[in-house]
Image (cartoon, rainbow, N blue to C red):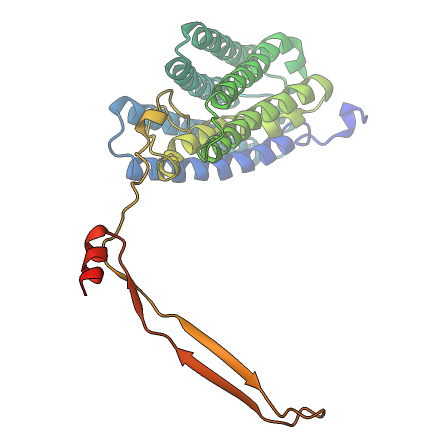
Length: 336
């Protein structure tokens, strides 16, 4: 591993930070698009859900704006100012608390969903406690950054960063495991299992995406002396928001695939079978059915060994008979 003195002044932290901000900005565009789709498609949702989505959008906007402001301040306004590049400012310190707040809100929403689906308040309480612990770690990280702004000294308050990211990972794994277990219990071996399998797949993808990003960020922070972890930490909050909005917007596809339209989102409710429509009743028709029978008789004569002889075919066409499928049609045909 290269010594820290061999890196450029902006290479230690601002290089990975710039890459992370690039993904942050791209995912922010996806957040705006998904928010627009949510407000146009689900106009009948409860007001608190709309306020909740608006809150996430505002927090993501604040997060992206402050990240951009810090990078502009460090790389443009303080260009070639080496002492400035070695320290974080209050603009940078806003990132941990906004990321932790967004992840906490999303996890609390999933805790409410688990409470509604499983009917188990203890599971929801455990999820909420882990989420609040992660929020506390994010707040502690912001305070420590303000107290110790040198990027190379961040390792001195690694305990609060470990609490922040490890608690977030544990919460996401717990949510994913509970939802997948619940969905597997809803399978009946019928055609509806296709819908359940699709929901399980989406649940695992959205849950494991946040776990993977937070885990990589934590491992790089503990093992790499430079700020490579910032490339994964900066877009983390956008992954949380996109995972929630994708589950809310997927309810349209769920309704097309199933009769269930539960407000809990992309999860099958307990009494979804009762909402299924009754099976179609077979219909019988009383109109007579006309069948035309054709018999063919073929007679081959005077065929020589070269295959040049004539072939004579005779066709006889039988009468058309009517078959009635009800008693009334049968009696009419007998009378005639």
